[in-house]
Length: 258
Image (cartoon, rainbow, N blue to C red; front, side, top):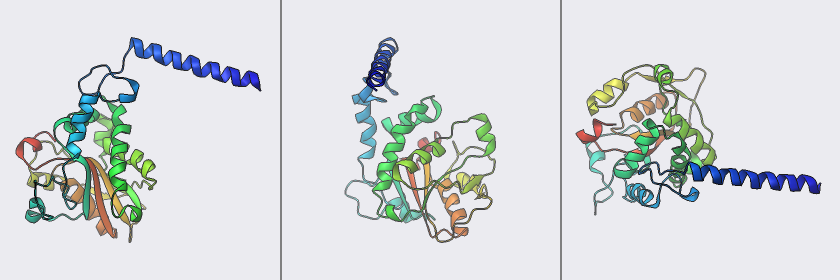
C-alpha cells in the first residue's frame, strides 16, 4: 500500500511539473487581448474580465431582457411596443463591449474552451430566477442539419448542456429546426418571416403542462425565441422562459452583426 501511495504522489508531481513546463513554453493567453495570464485568471486577464463583467451590471427588463434606462420604472419601452410569446428573459449581460467581443470569439474565433466560463455565468442567472424551482427542463435553440454539417460546434447546445448540469435541471431535446438562411443582417420583420415554420417538436415528444427554459447564446430581436416558444406552447407547454448570455438591442448596427 505505501508504494502505491508513493507512486501516485510521484505521478501527481510529475504531472504538475509537466503542466508548469508546458505553460512556460506556451503561456496561456487572454481570449480577448492575448496577453499572458496566470492559470487562475483563465480565460481572461483582469482588465478584460472587468470589461466583460461591466456588461452584466445594468438592470434588465424581466419580460424581454433589454437594458433598462437609468431611473426607468418597471415598464420597458420595448415591451410597450411589442408583445412576446415567452414569459420572461434572463441574461448574463448586454451584448456590447467586452461581452460581445468574447461571445464572438466563442462562436466564431475558435475559442470553444470558453464554454465553461459562459455556462457557469449562465447557470448563475438561471438559478436566480423566481421560477427556478419550477422549471422542468432546459431546451436548447436547435440548428438545422445543414448548419451542423458545415460547422460541428453549436454554441446554444453546448451552453444548454453544461448549464443544465450545473443547475441540476434535465436537458430535453424537444425542438428540431428545418433548414433556412442565417438571421445575420436581417431586420426584425425579415427575421420573423425567416424563422416562421422552421421549428417543430421532435418526434415522440410531448410537453403538456411543462414549464420550460429555452437557452440560446444571443437574443437580438426575439424572433427565434418567439417562434420556438410558439411551437412549445402549441405542444402544451404551460410556461416558456428564455435564458441567454447576451441580449442585443434592436438598433440597425447590432442587427447587421448578430
